[in-house]
Image (tube, rainbow, N blue to C red; front, top):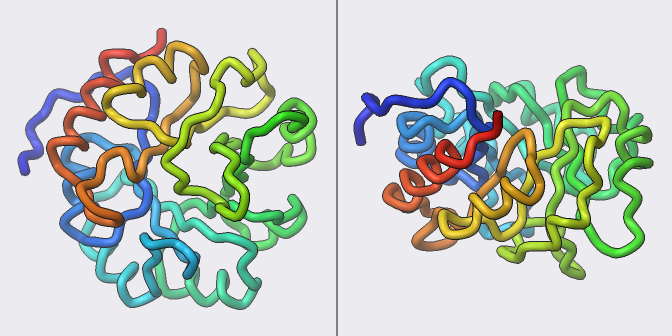
Amino acid sequence: MTGTQEIPTTHVKIKICGITRGRDAWAASEHGADAIGLVFYSGSPRAVNIDQAFEILAGLPPFLTRVGLFVDAEEDKIRAISERVSLDVLQFHGDEPPEYCRKFGKPYVKAIRVREGVDLRALCRIYADASALLLDSFVTGLPGGTGQTFDWAAIPEQLEKPIILAGGLSPDNVASAIAAARPYAVDVSGGVERAKGIKDEEKLRRFMRTVWDARLG
């Protein structure tokens, strides 16, 4: 790993989610990621506990946003994790209403699983104090991490909130996704892995470079 790459100053933001190892967090940072995500949902193969999260984040450089992902978690659990783990943003992937999401005094992102009948304009108003909406694929029984894409053309233009695009992204399709959806940021997990929860540094590098080459503006 090296930290000497030239990173474009204007690009779609990049979040690497499902980090389970400190070395992968460092690789994401050194290759230019804007944020990393830690999954605090036991139903995920990429789940981490408080001790693991603390070790992953220990010593990471500044200006890398730390995001904690939750799915219909109890309030006490979120507060306990937030007290121990230095999280900058909370990401909610369940049925959490806006009044619950804002209870913790941190910026939050609300994940929306896109399917027919979902009114994204209305959800922008409902979650008006969210930092962004994360759009993911809808698969019955899975709150996220599906590895499947959705119809990016279904995203309305000029939504009122920044959009983070997720769902089945990889180095091979992220340029097309950016061209179609023009998101504020992209969120990838399985698309840069060699096994669930284990990132592949070469895929990380390719993903970053492809996003930069496809940057907006």
